[in-house]
Image (cartoon, rainbow, N blue to C red; front, top):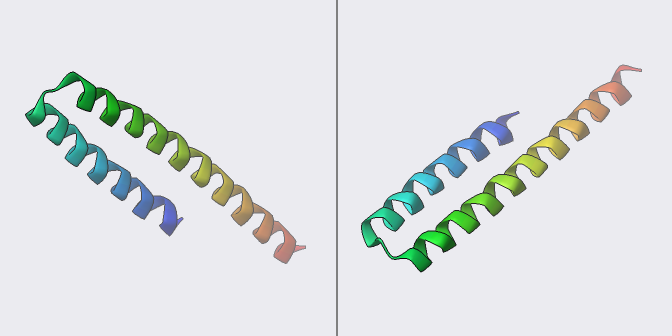
Length: 65
């Protein structure tokens, strides 16, 4: 669970930084790159968090039996 919290904080900080940078630069190609990388980052974070929760659930069920 700690990994999810720190991961969410890291994702939020990156998106805020990159979004602010894209807004200040204002060039369409850079904005597109930031949007695409942001989508990829969120997708990877979601999949990693889902996998981590599944592993934690399996570990608890194995030790509880």
